Amino acid sequence: MTTPQEELLPGTRRALLHRIAVAQAEGRAPSLVATVVRGGRPVWHGARTSVDGHGPDENVQYRIGSITKTFTAVLVLRLRDEGLLDLGDPLEKHLPGTGAGEATVADLLAHTGGLAAESPGPWWERTPGSLRPELADVLGEGPLPHPVGRRFHYSNPGYTLLGALVEKLRGAPWEEVLRREVLEPLGLDRTTGHPLAPHAGGWAVHPWADVMLPEPSEDLGRMAAAGQLWSTTGDLAKFAVFLTQGDDRVLSAESVREMRTPAAPAEAADVMDGTSYGLGMQIQGRHGRLLVGHSGSLPGFLANLTISVEDDVAAVVLANCTSGPLVSTVGADLVRIVAEAEPRIPEPWRPMREVDSDVMELAGQWYWGTYGFALRLTADGLVSLEPLSGTGRRSRFRPNGDGTWTGLEGYYAGEPLKAVRRPDGTVSHLDLGSFVFTRQPYDEEASVPGGVDPDGWRGIG
Image (cartoon, rainbow, N blue to C red; front, side, top):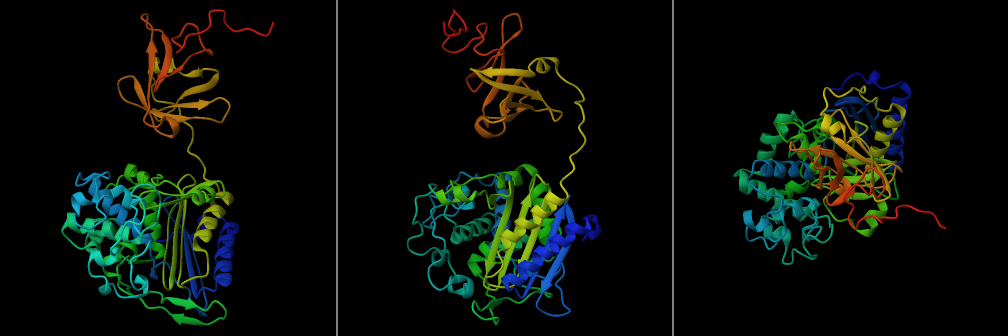
């Protein structure tokens, strides 16, 4: 249920309304609806429509296209978390005979399985799924036009395979599993495989005239896991909260964080655009912030879900036209408007409850060769290593319980950090994945690889 819109400042609400009004008018969309989520709940809803006296609310269904893929990815991660598969498993291990079995589960989730973008035959989004009753009909005779695992290539058949994998391991239809394991626990009762009133009709708007044509709404059959779902801004707002925080009834916070982590090698154009792909989630850098989520489209509909985890703001944008408004841009703009106008207020700083004196001894300045770093202890029990210059390799480290730590991100992700002590118990140096960090640049009292010149530091004589 939407909370009072007064939770956002009047100027922010007007800016949000102006943005979707421009999008609907310039994009010539029959209707466009949007919702903004902040602090784990909806705080604004807006709608623009070409029908006088009518404004779709948070409960009107639109088709969401490829946002369906994120729901399918959640089901696959649940199978992984239950130990029924490993992301490194080749598809052939669980679903033999497809002709694409050398692709791993992770490859399919991240669109690196080498599969074609579309299914062969008639345009699958505008024709009945009954034309493609079997996986072989979806994949065609040459399902792997690219090397497996080498490049990101968006693939609808790839997610069709993941839907079939879910059905095989659960022994039930994809939509039934989705409803039981995701939709019902999260309270997404307006997210369905087929439209339920009230729902929007899908339209094509002529590119050179202000006239419209109704689009067909087909059951995608085997390809449902790639784009079948209908949903609302209200339900997708709840889904955005789940993708930010996790929910132990469905997926842990750690597993949804894994979904939001880049998993695919980017093409050169993607590097320039600042885009990547995780496990069922699109990732992009825009306006200086990291955005995650997914877009979707099917004939007659456009959809976007955008989340800035750091700002704790998300946006949902839905429109009922085949082309027109750039909903991914609109979603990013809605997030930016709120994040900049009403920036997130951080939690109060609080000191640590207790500190280990052996760990406290390590805090302060360290040097890798001549590069200066600061090691800090934080109230969450982690330690961080940051370059004094402000740029360069940095990471947080989690304790392992035995006096060592493991890197959590960047160059040092997964690398071991430990303090090396002399026989008398004093700290000689830090060892970080074989890198030696000393209290002074090339400290002659520490075990610096290659040794230190005995004549020490000098000028030019």
